[in-house]
Length: 213
Image 1 (cartoon, rainbow, N blue to C red):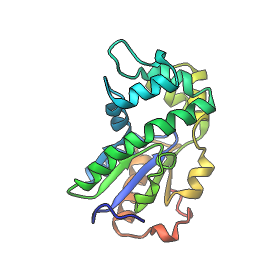
Image 2: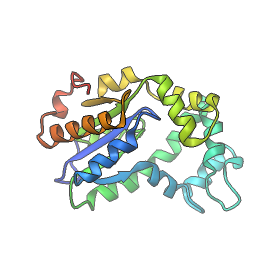
Image 3: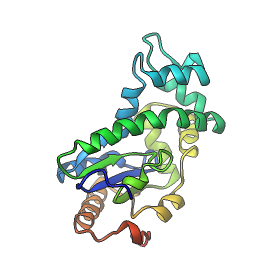
């Protein structure tokens, strides 16, 4: 594993609508510097950025808004129903995101949490000491996405269907937090995971997901 810093690097990933934002807050409260990879994606696709020009060229000029930034809703409608376009989108945007994230990690003054839903697609898992996933039943995720993003069930299901499923996250992450209960239960599971990580219980070179919370 390539070491970018002497600080601990933990990635947070999982299913859309599973509750990653709540778990992220717990890590922040525990003293982790949070790097929001979605926020980084927003920045690299803002007005006039090279990534926007490349995406418009190879996907569609229609995904650029009148201000010259990426229109995220139009982009989602385009790529989440077309696997090939999703793959092309990822190949274009991930190098821009990765460069920014690595720069932020090198400048971090304490342990880092990468809030990274697409950690594996971006191939950033190799720089992390541990990976935590948050998952939930499919129906719960769809309902939460609809409520959070004010989109139709069809669009929510398509978005979720374009992502890795719960079996994948159970098999490849160090700790899998399953959020099918109350918010309080999620807080408790998140804080337990943080305690385990700070105690170095889970080691990357011995990754086994016997640790479903």
